[in-house]
Image 1 (cartoon, rainbow, N blue to C red):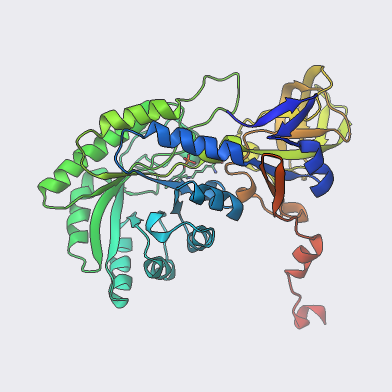
Image 2 (cartoon, rainbow, N blue to C red):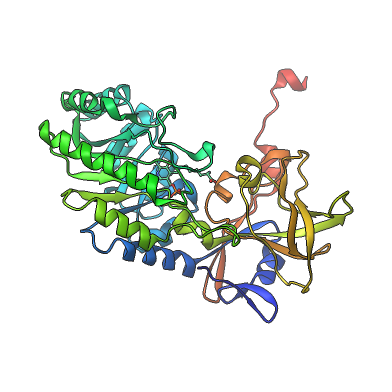
Length: 421
Ligand code: LLP
């Protein structure tokens, strides 16, 4: 459920007309709804209400905007970060370090040092060499780092190959079958305090079965580790729950279904459970608002050329992702159209042969469910300015990331004398 609704024939976000935002900020622009964010936090938390004191650490990579993070932090969420940059952003947005977990296969010594200094809750280690490096860094600071190993359960998440992470051939985690050896080695590292187990098998999962299979493996490992004398106190079950993009597709499992499965499978684990949801919190809370530049004749269907492009919303070209495209002020008719951006690549295509509202030049369209992995994956490809972002709450709205002037992009480069001369 979201808060993008039609009032008097025009799409509003909460009480604000999308047309007003486009007029004031220009297009393309990402628009987020605070009401949807807080609703999703509430729904997710409610789904886990049978658990004792779970840590819900929002996957910052899904939407790192400071205003979004501050909103989620005020609602009590922690943060799952995968870089020093995300760590500092989460802290700058007011998320306390003791609610932060650091994931990722390539943490550098410097990133480890900063995270230790800030006092984060847990490092999710992904390899033995990483464990050795973290131990050394911690010792050099007179600290012990709280760690879990992310295990690779060799489970097929059944999602797009580019966002599957839990198969043995994927780069993530330590092999499940070698976990006991890896934990034994970690226990001997004096800079580490081994406290947990972590898993994350992929994103946009539309079936609970692979998640359950992975969690069952985590449960068995916790038992084996305790048998080997490890004091396991946390289990991080990652993120991955999918959201509905295409109304014609079956609905993904609800947070309530997910929570019921987790509650059942983790019965008796006697750990603090941790979660790293990203998309399910922010996906439906955002839309990319764009203006039709022109419509041109196509061989099969008209090309609707909009002012947003693959650099603003990469998901369709990278993953063939489907985003609903709606006219902000629908004229009533529907017809097939191809929706494309201005970037000079055929991959800069949002939809082909899509049955959608008929639109013409200057009309506004909204790409729905763009709150997750939207603005954060934007680039300046084709020397296009980074997309601005707006946060709405009730009848209030604010630009939470301004559109940078193109001059700033140009000024970012420098020409050495020996080129200029
Ligand atoms: N935890 C870890 C360790 C992750 O790698 C991810 C996502 C999450 C949590 C959050 O997963 P979520 O709940 O959002 O599914 N750019 C892609 C998605 C990449 C996801 C990467 N990892 C997309 O646009 O579909």
